[in-house]
Amino acid sequence: MEKSSVAQRIRAFRKLKGYTQNELAEMLGVSIAILGAIERGTRKPDTKIINKISQVLNIEPDELVAAIAR
Image (cartoon, helix red, strand yellow):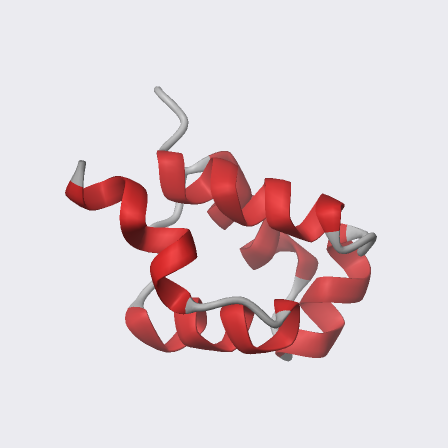
């Protein structure tokens, strides 16, 4: 399965901000399994989790989903 660009962007921004998967999952209030699945591209994040991730990482939601429109 090809990794989605949203998944890649979430992972890249998480690493750029210096968070582990465990730290980000805890801040989002989701399990590490859910975050891992989102980052692998095996689980599609809904709008609510996209907004939560962008808020925690202090970025605009469009920075995560902009790649979808291309």
